[in-house]
Image 1 (tube, rainbow, N blue to C red):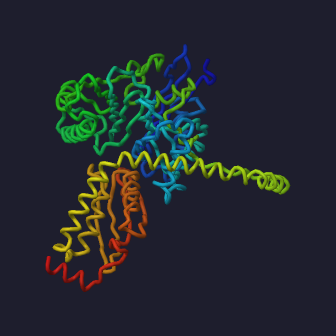
Image 2: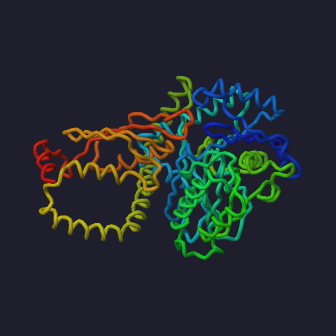
Length: 496
């Protein structure tokens, strides 16, 4: 039985909100309303209250009556990383992932909200997809919903919900591509588990037909991005077609000829999904919401049926525990009890945490055995050859350490770089998403040759929100912990 008879799904992007109202019907759901709310000129999540009031008027005008909603975020706001868990993790998965979060996001822990999608256990091994979202964006979405008179039941990722509700197949690797006006998002399922979710750096024209001249460019970029993902799958591009399938939810108007050409270039079968047939059995029934509204419909249906989402950033399983405000007497009583208990429990907790740390480090050490042997051989060769190259300018080492922190996909780039004589470095640039900036920041902080790594600012590069401007600073440190003197560095640059 369905406890709630009506649910509103809201798929939110930086410039619009797709709304679908689903009503419970015979174990599934029926679409009663579907519409797209485009943000007014000059409005955005930066001003959530006026935007929420405009959304409220829009929903009333279109006849929406549901008061409870599910919010889906676009992948541009999210950071998703696959994590391998040690064998026998069991019920300790939240604690293990919390330790990983503390190590990798120590400086940004309070600015991000985390949750995870847990994969099925195969051969004693299990993986999880760790998802992070900025607390600032979640607060803005909550303020928009409150101003619109809505109660938020859960907050998830639109493409992740759509991929989880798409009809399954026998393929070992199932890629779900969500094309919509302005962007493309991709999710990868393997062995019944979500392995990857990312925003592809492709600018999809809204409502364009793939056969038209302006669309050829983005279709070519899309093919290149998908080819990179397929090449990284186990077996590379030589994997049998039966083991893979690409499912496409298309809002950009791909014609059959374009799909056939895309299938031939990627060497894997492609299936276009359409609502309601593309959704799982007992899903949304006629009238069909169409591909444009399928993500919002899938989120609303999952909440209506009580099906837990892959991730719920509103009810995070990795959220730090909050202390309750209590009176003075209760505090004293708790302090006395805690004094009696803490002596016996602190050792057990420390032992458990140390055991988890040891298990994680042992697993990583086993995986890195081959890399360590190769690294030692490389160090020996470099040490032997270093006397012939000891006059190399320090600037080159500094720029190399900065370059290796940037990903190969072209998601982020620099627009200016300044290096002072004391190796103080300030650079700025742009990125397609805030998650790309955070990823580069994490890599810089993890580099022992860089000290004082700071994120000076991040902001939208323009009103469309398609690009993010940023600036960072750090100090380049020599392997022995010193800086080169200006005289030595200048003479080295002259000789080079």
